[in-house]
Structure formats: structure tokens, C-alpha cells
Length: 182
Image 1 (cartoon, rainbow, N blue to C red):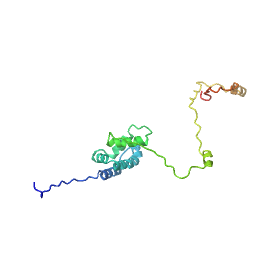
Image 2 (cartoon, rainbow, N blue to C red):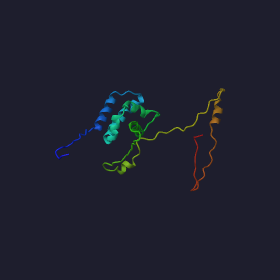
Image 3 (tube, rainbow, N blue to C red):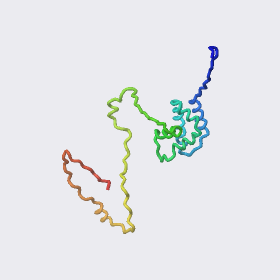
Image 4 (cartoon, rainbow, N blue to C red):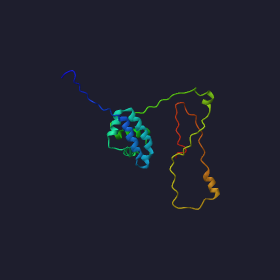
């Protein structure tokens, strides 16, 4: 081989990210799915588009799979019950294409501006928690009806037994109350 002969190899660069985005967006336009699948469709699409930008190997798998975005959303909501967390939704979507991939979630707080004033911190909450009714089973109505009691009988039934005088608890005592639960 002399010094004037050169062999060149052409390597074609494939932009998997752009191809994966184009594939997902095209399949989104042809989307077919249940009401549940449609409820996650736009969120899953937006997230998958972000993931193909993050990881070129994931983008390549999305491009080369025969699976569709509609099937992905169906797999996400399959056996999900009534509630599915965002993290689990995106984990299922990613693992539909790349079964051994994992999705991590991170939340951070960023404090902006000045802290609340003393008056703001001492102000009562504007929204109060709702009073939850105890889970007390309703008593079954009697099988047969009787004559209504007279007013005098009703008044005597309505009186509650006298309450016991409360004792002062010792420092290490603990008191539990089931009043209203039975």
C-alpha cells in the first residue's frame, strides 16, 4: 500500500432524538384509546419527549420499536385502579419502551423573596379542615314498628345518665376516649 491511497469510511449520523420526537408526535395525532388512556395522553407525551432529549439510547429504542404511543398509554392505565401517581405513570410509560429503565423523581424548594412577617405567621388560616363524621355503622331499624311513645315517655328516654366527676390525671397517665365512636 502506497502513501497516496486512502480509504475513507462514511459514518451516517442518525439523530435518534429528532426521529423519536417525530414518531411520538405523529402517533399522538393518530391516538386511539380509552377515556383513562386519553386522560394521561398529553402528560405522557410531554414527558416522553423530554426523556428522548435526555437519553439518546432511549430515543433509539422508541424509534425502533413497533409499539405505538396509543399502546403505551393503554399500558400505563392498565390495572391502575382509580388513582395513579405521576411518578408511576411515567415509570410505566418509560418501561413500556425500555423495560429495565428506571425513572427518578426529585423535588426541591427554592425560597424567593422575603420571609413572611410576624403578623402573617400569626394570622389564622383562611381555610379550615372539614369535620369528618366518624365511621359509625348505622343501627338497623327494627323489623316491626310500634306505636310512637307519648311525649312524657320520650322526655325520660332523652335524659342521659349523670357523668362521673373527672379525676385529675397523674403526670404519666394517658387517657383515650371512645366517646362518640360507639
